[in-house]
Image (cartoon, rainbow, N blue to C red; front, side):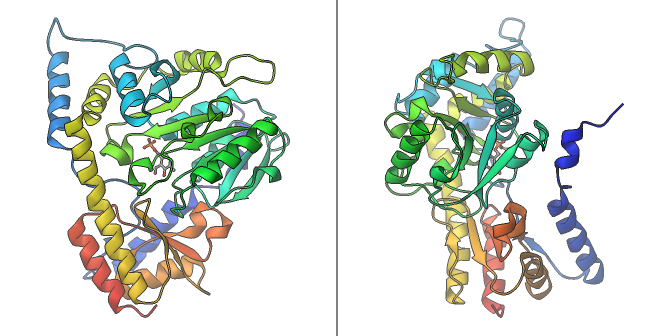
Length: 389
Ligand code: PLP
């Protein structure tokens, strides 16, 4: 069997293996040292009670001869799509334009199949590394070309006509959020240049103030944009798995054919629906009570992140992010991001994420996450206070 040649284009998943190895080496030499992780990209707060209750009741339905269900509807449960359309989009999109999935990462992988091997892909720099890797897995290096855009605000004039552009707002890792004016100009340029925008809103529930939560708040966005949404950070479903993709009916290829139709074809071929348990829990998470529970989880991470931000500011380190994401993007001056990683580990027993993991422009940064338990975050902030930064 010959290896799929596209896989040789990928760099090895060096970041997390290397973090693990460096932490293990340090812990071997310093077994008494209590380490705290500020490198988390995963949630830690438990699910809300009403969401948990809905899961238990969905599980018990599965044990009942009359209430048992097998495969769900191909696009996802109607009640969930209606809730997403009304609660999260205020009916800017219709339930029929929403496809329920097992999460945004999986949808990023599948979406790549929609665009042919010749597609030009553009990603922000720095950004979530999955966009570029998923694109590379599906295409040969000879035919695929990439553009790397500044993270905020990206300039689509720099990207060839007909390109597919992955944007994330608020951005992981920088925390930048695109304004209404940014989005209006992006949509306008994308329309003029025949480009598609894939808009990742995984951190939408962290946005504070009057910034768009969806690209569809901007007129004409339906003609150029696909939107990805996730219950992972919004409702703590990173283990349960639930997300969605919006494919507007107005989105058409150059030849006038419907992207929506192709996406139905794709999803019904390679995906058999998100877990019914997750979907029922998702419906509850979008109820008034569920939304209160979600915003309580979110506040815990926001308070954590603020505490860490204050600790850095007290040291005169001007971090970005922290307001619209649970992450801080911390400059490390002359230290490379790996040297900074070692420094935080050795001096304070703190595990951070080297910025280089999000692209070359992240090299003199680290990402610090507020997604941990508050007691540990408080201790971490106290350790930062004692560091020489
Ligand atoms: N998009 C971004 C920008 C992320 O940072 C993450 C997770 O860290 C995801 C998507 C993954 O979302 P999901 O858990 O829905 O697959």
